[in-house]
Length: 123
Image (tube, rainbow, N blue to C red; front, top):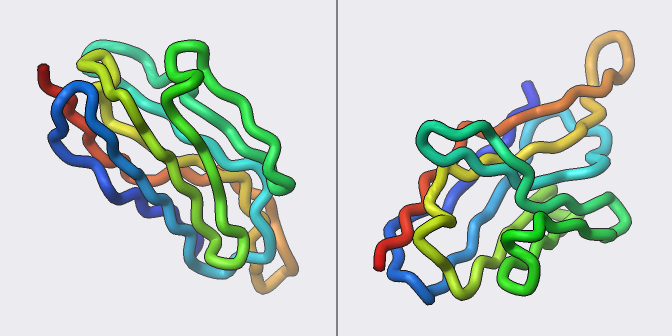
C-alpha cells in the first residue's frame, strides 16, 4: 500500500541547517498537495509548510525566511530545507500528502501521513 517515509531528522545546534526528506511509495497514480507538519512535546500538530503539485508554496509565519519546501515529482519525494534553526523548532516532523492510489477497483484518493522524524535543536 501507499506510504510516506521521512528521513533526515537528527540533533543539531541552534543556527545550524538540516534537510528533511519524504519519499512516497506504493501504488501511486498521482500526488496532489504535500506538506510538512510538526508536533512538539505537549503541543498539537501544526502546519509548517505546504506545496502543491505545481510548486506553489505556503509557510507558517514561524518558519518564513528560514525553511524552504520543495518536491521532485519524478521521484515522488518532498524536502524541507531548514536553516537558522532555533530550539523552538524541536519537534517530530511529519510529511503529509494527498495521494490518488491505484486499486483493483480503479483509483481512490487518500490523505497519507508518514511516521515522523525527530529534529532536536540544542543551544
